[in-house]
Structures are given as C-alpha cells and as structure tokens.
Image (cartoon, rainbow, N blue to C red; front, side, top):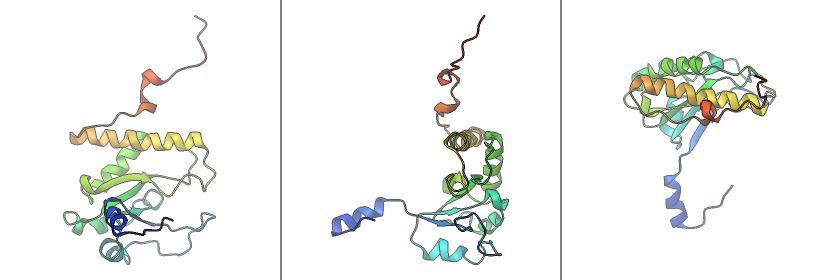
Length: 173
C-alpha cells in the first residue's frame, strides 16, 4: 500500500479508477451468508462508496439482481463490472455464451457504464493458466461479438487470430 505524502500526489489519485468488489465466498469457495442479493447494498455501493467501478459476481449467481439497475440505467454515475465467466468451472467458456451474458446485462446497464470480467479470480479454484487464458480470451471475444452487433469498434484479440495460431505438429502430406 502506497503512502500519499503531498497534496500533488493526493490530487493525482483522482485520475485513478478505484473499484469496489463484492465477494460472497470465503477462501474455500463457500458462500458465507445465505442472502447473496445486492438489493440491501446497492445504495451503499453506488452512492456512498468512493469507487468508480462496482464489481459484481454475476455468472455463478445467474445474473440475479441485474434488474435492480433498471431504474438507475440512465443515471448510473459508476461503471458496473459484471462477471461473465465462472471462476468455479474448469471448462473454458465459449465467446458466444459470454456475449449472451453481456446482452442480458445490457438490458439494465448502458454500454458506456458496463465492464465485463470474470466472477472473482481464477486462482482460488485450482484453475490452471491455460484454462484462465481461454476464459479471458472468451471475455474479449464475447465483447467483440456484442460490440459488432451494436456497431461499435471491436478490439483485436491476438489469441483468436488464425495467423498467429501455429500447429507445431507438421502434417506428413
């Protein structure tokens, strides 16, 4: 943790994005309370916490509580980051499935306020780097599917570029 010592350093902190993350699990992956709804905390996170982004676990909760954002859709001051891939599953997600999660979120959160991520991180459930790589790539590709449909600029995803995919086993033909 950095120590801020001057007014100049303090002023520079306003340029940083600060996020608030809400997790429903202990270190063993067990939910530590029965009610995982964000209904009782939405005002706290959106109005009283100083973060620029509120990160929510959504994939493993089947996007429960997304509808809470509908009345606020055009008034959101913060960005909302939703988990669109699971950190609990060791199966790589498909970009089309991630795009489906994003489309559901866009019913309640405007595109300029939506950030897409994973539920939690990939390290806690024994997810190896290769699976985490495919999950992260699916997030980028799923975002591109939705961006293209909305007429927005897509980003280049090198991992999905066929020119950069090399088969190290040469065919014998």
